[in-house]
Length: 146
Image (tube, helix red, strand yellow):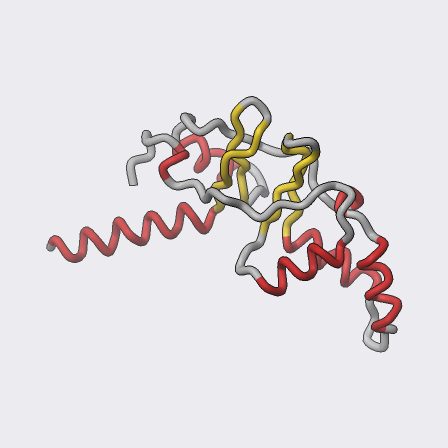
């Protein structure tokens, strides 16, 4: 992997997003049906936050005991809003920023996903898994050459 290449070369595009006023039932359905761990939050076209699967699970487990009432839990999901549990203090990169910048952010912070924005508009996302997948491809390619 060329760490000097633009982050746009490894970012995921065509993202599933939610709005801050969406209910957590929608989030539940996304996490249960899609193989993703981060959902960008968009308001009026602008990135306003991100909701991780960890944020969602913490919310769920914080109120659920061993003998919880499933109907009550479903009601909480229908009435709870994304804005109540999303993360707003985000690290962001622009499409032309280097992959190395993403690696440095991952090393220094607890973030596992970095939104890629241009003038506040979401263009993609880079996750720690994206970095690992691209490194793995490089290793596989190097093994095939030797």
